[in-house]
Length: 180
Image 1 (tube, one colour):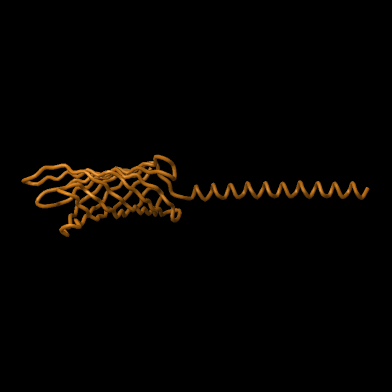
Image 2 (image 1 turned 120 degrees about the horizontal axis):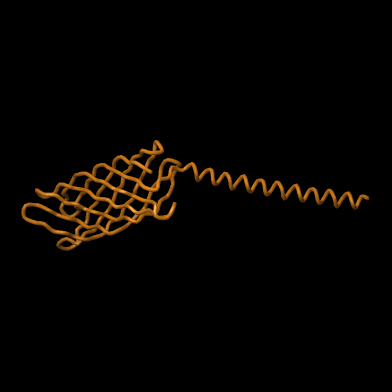
């Protein structure tokens, strides 16, 4: 009888340990899922704000306005951003348009940073010249979401444009966000 009781006790202890392990695993899985749900996520984001760019060759500063739309192409892995600015420059305007492919990283539930690169097209228009130039842009995008629907963004960038040789500049956009 003692052998039988020892087996039964061992079997019950094994079953209890397995049940506790399964329960802990389910709780941890639920915890990870709950943490993921706490991040503020949007499929589409619309941004409106300001823009500025410093031409590195001659030190000129161009200021203006910016609009952007961003969508989540692959959840938590790849985002695409189409951005256009209108900048004052040389008694005319410059309109850079970027398509940036970005990788998002969550810093907190309400803040994220994205690293991205992509092609850029710049339309230059002044009284003597109308021209289109092509190049590339690299950006760091910081988004802050104080509420579920509305947020703020700042996006410093570096661009390299084929314009009478290579022209480079550093710039920044930023403003208000609306997310869906």
